[in-house]
Image (cartoon, rainbow, N blue to C red; front, side):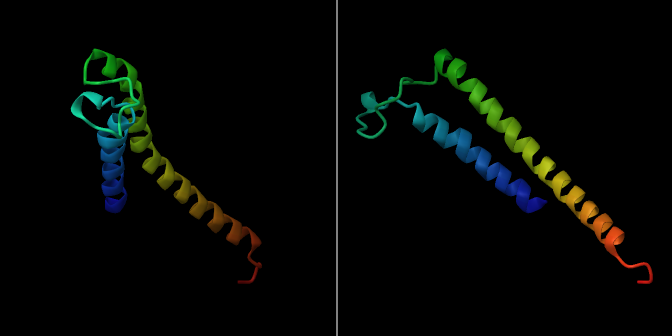
Length: 92
């Protein structure tokens, strides 16, 4: 569980800290030749209006998915045990 928590943190940091900013960045004023196609030049109110929902959505997904995965693995383990008990012969 500690490994999952660490990886969720790293993925969240990468998703919200780097990808969202670079994909929508317009760094033409800073002399960049790579990130000039975006429409957001700075962290102003328009950036928060446009990107806020995406940031919150990815945070919710990254916080709920590990719990759902653990519940899924637990239900599979219990289900396979029950299936083995159901298929086992009577004398064993």
